[in-house]
Image 1 (tube, rainbow, N blue to C red):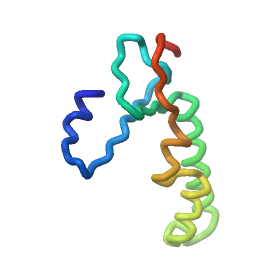
Image 2 (image 1 turned 90 degrees about the vertical axis):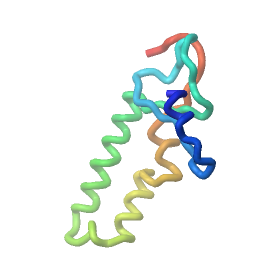
Image 3 (image 1 turned 120 degrees about the vertical axis):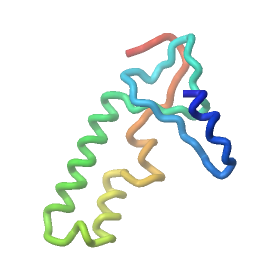
Image 4 (image 1 turned 180 degrees about the horizontal axis):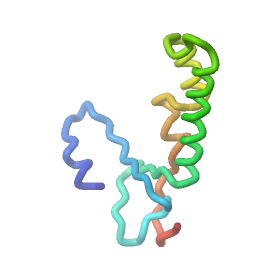
Length: 100
């Protein structure tokens, strides 16, 4: 993952390294990047539930998909917004022995 991040040379881009993996603990030989996050199976399930609930809430009334305020309210309620997404649906990587 480190090599992929070094290709982002634009100082205007703030990269957040995210990986989908069963463990949030890095192996002793791993090279986790600063601020790295992991979508664990439990967080992935939580995300799936949120997306389904979001879609059901908007589908519950005619025209809600076209209502910008209704869409924004459901995104915020399910924590699917850019400012909350990764804090809610991923965990911080910790260094140590491999953990599954």
